[in-house]
Image (cartoon, rainbow, N blue to C red):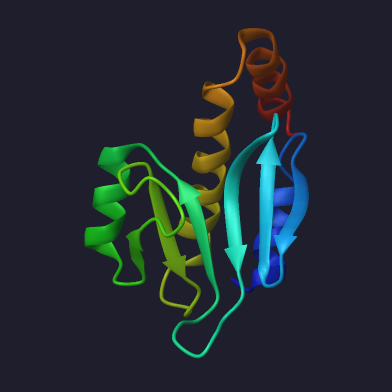
Length: 124
C-alpha cells in the first residue's frame, strides 16, 4: 500500500480525522485519539505507518513480517511501526489499520464507543 492508499483507507473509517502536526507526518484520529501515524521517508528509512495493537497481536506481527517493528513515537507494547516497503500484504495492512481504529474506539466513553461501533458494523 502507498501512503495515499493508507490515508484513504484510514479516512474511510467512521469519524476519522486527519491532521498534520509537522512536516512529513500525518495523524489519523477517532474521538480525538490517534490510531495511525503516517510518516514520510527520509535518508535512513522508507515511508512508514505506526498503528495501535493489542500486545499479543503486536508481537505476532513482528515475528511474521520483518517490516513490522516496535512502535516509533509510541508505547512499544501497544504500537507497531510498519515500513511501507511492499512486503506486508495489502489485506494484512488494512486489517492492522482497522484493528488500530477498533483498539482506540474501545477506549472511548461508552456512548461514543457504541455509536462508532454501530457505524462501523453498518458499513461506515
